[in-house]
Length: 296
Image (cartoon, rainbow, N blue to C red; front, side, top):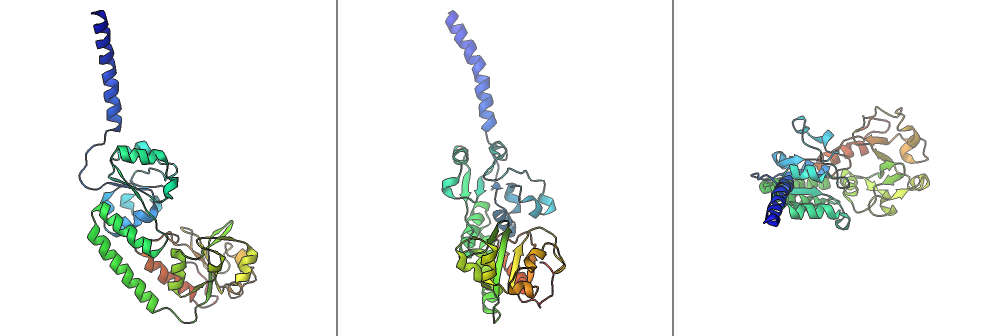
């Protein structure tokens, strides 16, 4: 009898603890899609297809790019420092990453599986992959028709740009990082942007993706136009900008003719459904009159 009493007391003491554990991971039911995005490109695409209301959590890189009405959204971190507890509190239906599949943390995979969260690992390195990603995001957000319409619009804009490509394309090098010097190589969306803007990406010969090169290699490439990506920084007013001085001293045609420009658009290194706007700006820069100055 005494053993039964003791056992009953143990059960009474343990049950609240078990109940508390269950509540800590219990996801409140919500109607409609709820998306946590840790990739700024994906977040922008969701906004561009009219899925803003489905976004419930973002990465720290998203904040400066969001409209003011959305800057209150919780920051869940990135794929390397994801706050899994906060993610669960947001009760998402989908979690977006952009990472090599083999490098996704096992804890993230386990969390999404155990809680019925769709893990959407996107890849946006080319225009073709952009179309695929936009369709996927349209599907998980319930905005399939809007995504399809945006893709059709983009394809039309890209076709117009391709057909109106200027004659006599100049040699272009596009630097995405200055320490070390990383350039836009072959087979990526920024290479495609340069081409559609009317330039010849001479750094293609340095390799695929975004290869690292030396100043000596840059001199041998001898670009007629040198673009330096500085997303989110202030625009430059001309050749006197101190950020341009090291590059204007290089023994290349771009420096001689003051055809060195900073690309300061916050989305300069992102691929979204509005990429045609960036390509038009690049075309204006690439074919600007020598000594015109001014960053974009």
